[in-house]
Image (cartoon, rainbow, N blue to C red):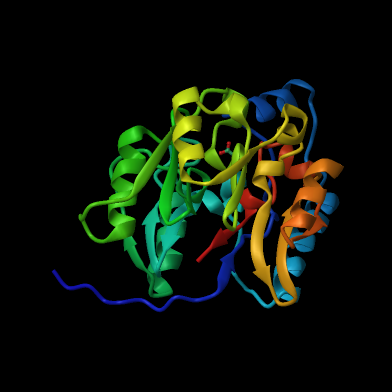
Amino acid sequence: MTINSATVKKQVFMIEPTHFEVIYNINPAMAETLEKGQKIKKKPARREWEGLRNIYTDNGLERVGMDSIKGLPDIVFTANGGFAHNGRIVMGRFKYPERQPESEHFYKWFTENEYETVRIDEDFEGGGDMLLWQGKFIGGHGFRSTFDGIKTAASFATFWGKEDDLVPLKLIDPRFYHLDTCFCPIGEHAFYFPGAIAPDSCEALLKLGKAVPVSEADALKMVCNGVYFEGSSGPKFVVNDISRKLEKMLEKWGIETIINKTSEFQKSGGSNRCLSLFL
Ligand code: ARG
């Protein structure tokens, strides 16, 4: 087998919300949107998306991406396209047929842009269900990704077919169907919503480091879908909304909170993290 080493770039992959809408129901937020007959407001959606992109680019990250695709409204949630680690992408394999055609488009872009890619046969929804923390792959399973999916993904992310360092977390609340809706690494700290993660999985998480439980109110504000990153003037946390208590905690850790509202994307069950795939 030949392995070409890929370069690690400081890039964030985002797709414009041109064709973003809610037309099918694959999570409770979408069900509510459809039930209430709510529509996506195009201009606010674009404003929110551009707000996030500008926060990244103003902070020295390069935004890369491809055109949005009509009929694939959820492709805007690039976090699910794959899991990127050391220049290698384990491609997402979507559970629901509505999102499955997205994979070909992600795959095409990654291979054309010379990323080392691997496709697996199990359901695995990329960065939405796998996050790096404390040198481990934290994998969420139960709703979208299967246990086998995160296991295979972690083994390939480490090194082709070799031992992995996976900490699997079982997700138990359908409102928090992806790991990145209820767990959020913040440097050596993390936020997590205990109500969405099985008790023994919470225990495993707490053994790893300083994970701070957040309230249901904060979890519903999509606090765990916030994005922690190293900005040009220090560490930042971009989030839709957050309680003063958690904001103060971030302040104490030396992290600046930046609010970027995502009301339109929440109608589809996503927020800032879901819109971002760090490469
Ligand atoms: N409507 C999308 C879905 O249900 C939202 C995806 C949110 N992505 C995430 N990484 N949590 O698949």
